[in-house]
Every structure is written in C-alpha cells, then in structure tokens.
Amino acid sequence: MKPIAIIGSGLAGYTVAREFRKLDKTTPLLIITGDDGCFYSKPMLSNAFAMGKQPQQLQSKTADQMAAELTATILTKTLVSGINTVAQTIHTKMGDFEYAQLVLAPGAQAIRLPIAGSAADQVLSVNNLTDYAVFRDKLAQAGDKARVTILGAGLIGCEFSDDLASAGHEVTLIDPNILPLAALAPTAISQGLHAALNAKGVQLKLGSTASQIDMLDNSLQVTLSNGESFNTDVVLSAVGLRADIRLAQAAQLHTDRGIIINEYGQTSVPEIFALGDCAQYKQADGSQSLMPYVAPIMTAARAIALSLTGQLTSIDMKPAAVLVKTPSYPVALIPPAFAASKSGAWESNHADGVTISRYFDEGKKLHGFAVAPQDAKSRNALIAELIEAQATRLN
Image (tube, rainbow, N blue to C red; front, side):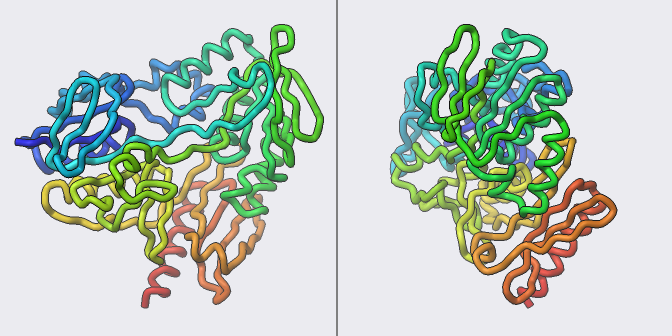
C-alpha cells in the first residue's frame, strides 16, 4: 500500500499526522524532513529568554518518539529535490518514495535583507530550534547584558524585543515604519505598544533601516539609512518570512505568494495538499491569503486529515485572534480580510486603560478588531461580535 506522505516536520506537518492517525491507524505514514525531526513549539522561540528556556527545554519529543507515537516512518536530515506529480513519487538523495496522497508543509524561509558592510554575514535570524541555539550562544558570548539590535518591528521583532529586554539585555529595535507593528495593527494599538516597549528600555529607532553592518574591534557597528551609527553585540533580523514554495513551483503547482489551495486544502493537483506558512488559503470573499498563525494550522490540519481518509472536508476558518506575545502590552487582533481592508477604516476608543479598535467597511460593517492590553474576556467578546457581524453579512 502506498503511504500518505508529509514533507515537513513542523507544527503543520506533525499536526496533520496526528489528526490523520486519530482517524486511520493502519495506512502507512511517511514524513520527510530536512532537520532532525524533533517536535517543539516554534511560537515559543520569540518569548523563551525571559522564561529562561534553553533550546533543549523547548524540545518536547525526538523524531524517534514521534515515529513511535504516529506509527510512522520519519526520514530526518533528508532534503526533497523534486516531486513527480504524475508518477506520484518524491525524489531525495536517499532514493525515490511513492505516495498515494501528499501533504506539503515546508513552512517559510527567513527574508534576508540586502545589507552592505564587512559584517553583513553576521546577521542572525531565528526560524527554527537550531537557529535559536545559535542565537543563544551568541548572546552568552556577549555576556549577561548583551547589546542586541533587532531589524524589523513586526510581530516577531516586537516579541523578541520585549522578551530580551525582560531578560536584561539592551535592545535596539529598527524599522522603516514610524510605529511598531504598523503593518498589522491600527495606529492606536501601535502607539500603545511603542510606549510600552519604550518604558521597558527598548530603544526604538523607527523611520529608518540598517544600511551597513561592519566589524569594529570586538563588536558590530550598525549604520542606519539616516546616517546614524552605533555599536552592538548581536544583530537579529526579524523582517519577516517568505513562504517556501520552491518544491511546489518545481512541480508546477499553482503558486502566488504561497502555494494556492482550495477550500479543502488541495493544490492544483488534487492528490497534493498544503497547509501552514507555505499555504495561501481561500477566503470567504474569494481572495487568497497567507495565514502564518497557529489557529489556521490546527483548523486546516483537522480538515485535511479527514480529506486524506476520503471524506473531502472544507477548511472552516472560524475567527481566531492573533496573540502578540508582548507581556508589556499584550495585543490580540484579527486583521480585516484583504478585500475589506481596501474599503474601510479603523475606529478606536480608550477606556479603563484598555484600547479597542474596530475595523468597519464603508457600510459600517465590522471586519476586524484589535485590543490591548488584552485578556480572554475582552478577546472573546470581540470575537463573538465579529462572528455576529459576519453572520449578518451572509444573510
């Protein structure tokens, strides 16, 4: 019997495998991964310093333990070089492997900025547990109060800034926007986060970019596009991720910014599914969107697992808030869908120390929200409000 094959052993790949095994105990399951196949919580990478978590403490299970749990064959340190969608085979240096159905979950790659200077190659990124271990080592070499410069004040950059500052490091945060989290959050929320990070001791150098990084004695010298320069011990790039669509493109699957999937998670070849950071999901308004968050992965994994058993099941994306792990100013938000974001505006109010922003279209219909400081009560109330608004629009 040909196996169900999964490429990728991150949260997306392993969650599909777990959900599939709940439904089917006997069909062979093959997981192919380029890393060591251990299971860990990737979202914890950006807030593990203040908790004192070492890399090994973030790992919950080894590849062998996952193989036993899933009754699966897991090929680690194995790079996939191609997929033959006609013969239904996966090509690797270890040989070719057949599949009955295939799930693509290769995740995303860190975006590399074109920075000049003799130490441009010293810029780190943290996209997996191995990267995190390298980053920890660099910080340890710099001492208890390392000077850390973070490029990018998006979700991950802000989370790392808050976490590293809480751990006692001297943090500088750089971004071309004039406020942190500008691409995701409304201005009122970004202003609150700016004030909280500033109060935490984070130096925010906004409205500028790093143009050059050079070695200077035993440290790094960062030169900004506005001409300012300063010294630092470690530079971390958190400018974002790019969906890994290389295998999909080589296999001539339909791609855009991600691997395009339909409402069932199928690619342009029905026997091949995709989910996670690599996938571009179909939205209710017909648009396609990347959704690099935990909740969509869990929802998609459950639906795709059912489809793999022959019960074709649509991915029913319920509204789920993105939680920004910045304890100094915890944010929860659901951004408006792409189509709605072009025809509306944010409206914000402040009461009892809490800022709530709602996104209304031109017809005054709710399409998204943000709240900070957030808690479960405020978050769930706004989700219920959004669900009711969506139901009203559909009726």
